[in-house]
Length: 202
Ligand SMILES: [Zn+2]
Image 1 (cartoon, rainbow, N blue to C red):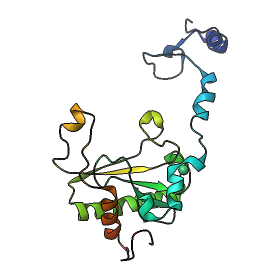
Image 2: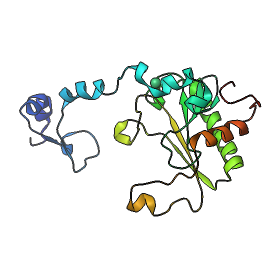
Image 3: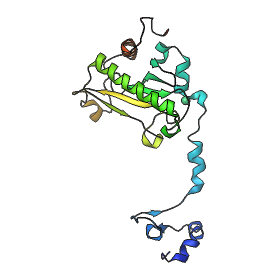
């Protein structure tokens, strides 16, 4: 295609023929990329993002007791759970109860409570584990690194000055010095409003 205006009108014919288009032909800031439009692939992409919620660990966890599910605290719209595959001891996830995949699908109430629970988790983790900092964030979609992409969850990873050693670099192995059950109990007991009731009955 040469970029003359008439060519834009028959762009779909050009795509059907397997041709690519250059950015110079569009009313936008040009870049160096050519684009191959592949709308037929959407069926695979969309199907891959809609698993059945019955199989979702973040939907199942709140139906179990706290100790079994490794839940640290429960709010009205969201809850806090220990990550089963922690990057560091005290690595927690804040999840809405609703099975929604991405942040833009969360309601205002869910967003507000995810934020509040994140703040409380930071204070509690600082208090009980003396950490020096945090990594906080959400991976949106499997391509972005989300392990369970179908159910929104925010990571809160406590960091210590000396927590990065040679293990992750040479062996793909992360040393986690504490058992999950012990860490869960410690955080749950440090949570504001926590009672002295045995774990699992809160
Ligand atoms: Zn779910």
